[in-house]
Length: 178
Image (cartoon, rainbow, N blue to C red):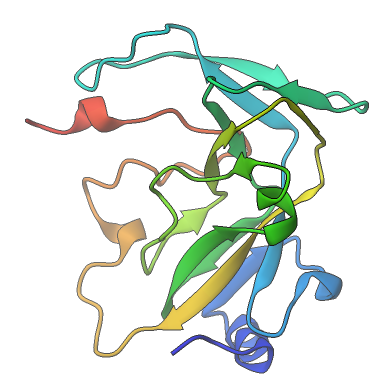
């Protein structure tokens, strides 16, 4: 079951969902709009290795915007810090962003119960497009969880993305044992 605007507000009031900063105008009928933060990152190497730490180079989006290019993966970040303690957050791109040919996640559109952080975005595009810090970039949709939770993400010992940040975070796949 997807939470309605009233259920999202109830969950915020009782601390089950946290959105900072919260803007009432960003609350939709059954979603909350998130905005692009000012930081982007790109990988320093053209060839990435899943078993190695792939380093990134930071880009700060200037006031006049930044043109993203096809064929490059940009890591972005939401302005909003979020927490979810009773539902599963799903991040989807806004249709207006999709109509510009921008994809905001390659595979990581679902969060876990207990995820407490900003969202790193996996941004790609089909043609050059200028993007701006603060622009609406996606929407969070919350699904209720049935049953008790045993393993909250923020309490997992092996969770790789628990450190609070305002910048995009590179892949931590290299921390896995395989």
